[in-house]
Length: 492
Ligand SMILES: *[C@@H]1O[C@H](CO)[C@@H](O)[C@H](O)[C@H]1NC(C)=O
Ligand SMILES: *[C@@H]1O[C@H](CO)[C@@H](O)[C@H](O)[C@H]1NC(C)=O
Ligand SMILES: *[C@@H]1O[C@H](CO)[C@@H](O)[C@H](O)[C@H]1NC(C)=O
Ligand SMILES: *[C@@H]1O[C@H](CO)[C@@H](O)[C@H](O)[C@H]1NC(C)=O
Image (cartoon, rainbow, N blue to C red; front, side, top):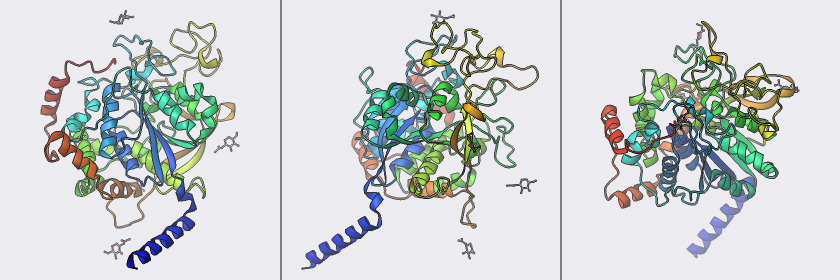
């Protein structure tokens, strides 16, 4: 009797839910393309913690033209997915290849520019890609290991994983790194373009140079390359493969761009850091926080709280909010102010049509690559490394603009929805000013505890979860440099 009644009530509640939320029956399928920087991992966790019935992360493609190397990046993503009980998500690797210290581009690179021409934008640092590959040692110390492992030459390619996911039905792409994988996919599978409903990308720099009244050293230039005197306009993700970004933005698929203009208004400031420290109720929150703490403690100057921003995780927040409100105004967003702008991506520098040996789309080819025009916007000088004399202007800033997401008009322009700044906090009593900070903590740091993370740690390491409370960065670097020092870290 009792049982029957409970069952009946459940049935009624179930029906009501269906009636009230008819759209919820179909989760949004999402594909993420990532370069697996620390920031990407926070974004992945934030996404994985969403309700799967609302947002279903279907596949991940890894792009290793930026910060990390293939095997490390894939294993890292596998372990994150294992912790979150999502071993069902396929992971493909793309963008392998390299550029030698003398500038020679290896032939097997998987970017539109040919090889990893722009990989040199990411300085190798003291230990090659060690910092990101190991997540500063925090990964090995704290992250449970999953069963899946990267297998060289057998790992599914990014292109195959993308093809499987995108051909299976309507999907939204979240791009957290360079656009190489997606651009190559669009060029080789034009008939599947129709399945991509929307592309959200963290990348580029359009207008603002920094948040209001900020005194950060970042202020003054639009972009964020480490050597801004050569190219003050580019942001890393777009600079990593400007022609790929151009291809994606001009693909005809609706794009929402979250550029530095917006992310610089949401730095990972001290109040947020402190609030995060207080909210450590889940294993993934502890892992994320210890990662951030390590980044802070090894930051090269004392500007961490101004310079380290919510980049990819903020983009994911903006994307999810926009998907939730898609039946209302396009520009209605919980976390960011958005504006339509006419843009393009600069891929080469004037004068156009002069072959000087720098441009891999044109030089030495009877027919230019990808059908670009010999005298068009892609035919000029392409920046050669971070000390290219072509880009230097006497006693001024560099003039190269490769990768600049520039506002423009006319035939070259494409209309893109651009995030301009993070929204202020509704709660006037909050010590923090941004809504997204609160949401991020609510999602990652509280919510359901990922039991699986704890279980796996216990199983594989036969010990309790160990959380570092304080870390000596120098000692860490020495230890891990010794352990991994013999391994080839990267081609850059
Ligand atoms: C660059 O280095 C590689 C490997 O050492 C070498 O094979 C190649 O000839 C060098 N290229 C130039 C232009 O020096
Ligand atoms: C920035 O500076 C202007 C002028 O000094 C001031 O009016 C404004 O309140 C400042 N904004 C912030 C956020 O501090
Ligand atoms: C973008 O360009 C189109 C076509 O030239 C124009 O109609 C539209 O108003 C422009 N949008 C913005 C935001 O400038
Ligand atoms: C802010 O704090 C005051 C005083 O403690 C309280 O009355 C008010 O309700 C709070 N406002 C919000 C939005 O929480």
